[in-house]
Length: 157
Length: 157
DNA sequence: AGCGTAAGTTCCAAAATAGAACCCTGTCAA
DNA sequence: TTGACAGGGTTCTATTTTGGAACTTACGCT
Image (tube, rainbow over all chains, first blue to last red):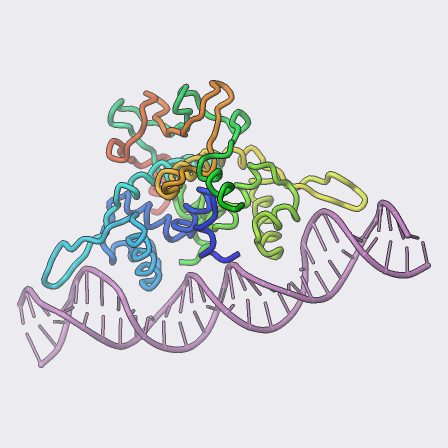
């Protein structure tokens, strides 16, 4: 299977990966959340090659995760900002950070901690059920066929 | 920057990516959550080349995300299961699914839906603050230097 | 005229992946 | 007792992707 075929599969994980399924893209988004906006800043902070950076940014813009805005006309200068779709990626990043903190930080502890301005506390992100607000455990979840798959079934005779 | 250097950086996103930063690894985990355990089953379900599958499974085992168990001695047969570290990846996967469902599912709707056995409802995963249980928004979060970075600072002269 | 800056492109070498074939150990059925 | 099959890999070559470094373009400054 090639990667182009992935975004057509009826699986939200695969579709998401078709967009953000490489390491550089995820690191670009990480830095975007840390307020990086310009080409050269991304390049210097990440150590990514300019070539790859250009192609990844173009892809993110094409797919609606980031937008490219002119912040100066002459000479033309651009900045890249997260769209709403991009900002919504934050929950994935938080989950990724939490996993890394829990399993890979070692003795030293988490490199970054986060404060929730609303309540003023340091916190961990918690993944809970939207209905009962209890934390979720794999073994208590049953996947069922959703509308996106039912359509497919009907179609293929 | 090469990928081997990544796991040494003081960032939990980068460290996590050093383990699961390629698309196949994430898809392997996805199928592991769907109860796939054997080499040939992973291979058939994913369409990954046997070579890559072998190397990815070996890496996951080496790093403690999955374990390789003998389920039959003669001839020797193995199965791959998620460890606790692997099971804990589920919150990342849920976030990824939610993002894909929200932004990439289109008209047809989500391919899979999930029922929380505890409360009996279909749900969406929600990322909330461990302290006040309110849903988190990027703009209400302040990152601060954690112990893992303070150590580094002290060390470098 | 020459230097600096932001945002890319271009080019070649090195690394990773795809696809297919092959290997090993043992079981089973003819 | 030979041949087919199963599970779990390994090996090989061709193709794609990356990495690294230099070059380009369009302007503004001194």
